[in-house]
Length: 111
Image 1 (cartoon, rainbow, N blue to C red):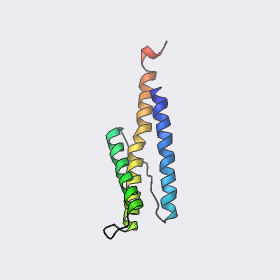
Image 2: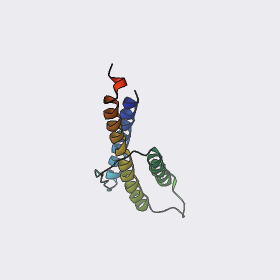
Image 3: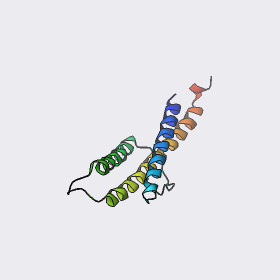
Image 4: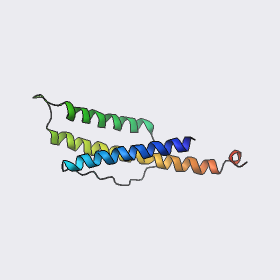
């Protein structure tokens, strides 16, 4: 069940990231989701980069006074944060694979 939960979360996260990529592309910004060598999944890191992304989105949405940063600057931050989310989230699949392999080698699971 845990593996299925992780998989479903990963699918949802990937879909949300793709929607954000498409939105940024409409504004002329591209996101490079490079495959990096991720060896460990750190939920704290994923939460932190997702929070930063949300903060940037709120800044872009609610900006309207003279102290606001230009939208281009915020878009650049969104591109970087989406790349960071992609890197952090890629650990989900790696963690699931490791869990799946270790549980298949667990004698308690071979009944």
